[in-house]
Amino acid sequence: MTRPLTPGEEVAGAACGFVGSKSITVAGARYRFDCSGFVEASLASAGFTFAGSTKDLFATARQLGVLHRRHRPDVGDVAFFDDTWDKNGDHRFNDPLTHVALVVRVDPDGTIGMIHLGGSGIVPLTMNLHDPDARVDASGKVINDYLRAPTSRDTARTKRFAAELWAGFGSFWKVPPSPVPKAESVASSP
Image 1 (cartoon, rainbow, N blue to C red):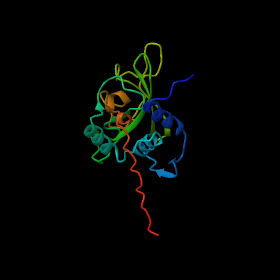
Image 2 (image 1 turned 60 degrees about the vertical axis):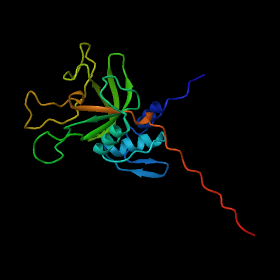
Image 3 (image 1 turned 180 degrees about the vertical axis):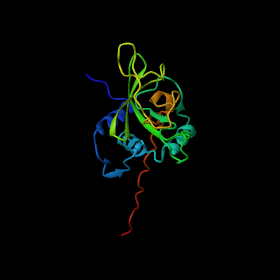
Image 4 (image 1 turned 90 degrees about the vertical axis):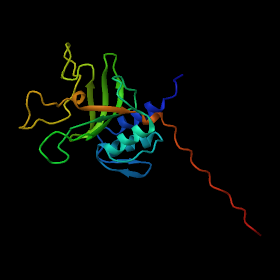
């Protein structure tokens, strides 16, 4: 007999189900085809209604008390990242909260498997917060994927790996779902 999925596992399963999709629809509702739209849809698939940009989701996680910076997240957590692209157009990487992904697994060595919607569509993403500036470990296993494309302005100290750009996690799936109000019955007169 298998155990029921946790709410976080349900969120992660939904995220995995979107890999390779060219559009995002949940229960007939269409979601934005961007990183935060993907996260909204994955959460909605598991019964959690949260909406907004990466910054909005971060603020909501903080307000609800589910924002954390533990190096070992839970499956189903939302991962937040800074400086993944030049959002304000000032030719500098100084833009906080520019990307989100969903945690789908955590390996024993601390490598975190995620799904995100980036320039290549909805695809896996890997990071290891215990070794943030290494691309691979001693055995050759990829532990940090690139999250920011190289530019001509890069230096040896330019941060490009997912773990270098990580800003925190949000455990939205830990927030109890809002009860759905019951419709009031109205007696009709004869």
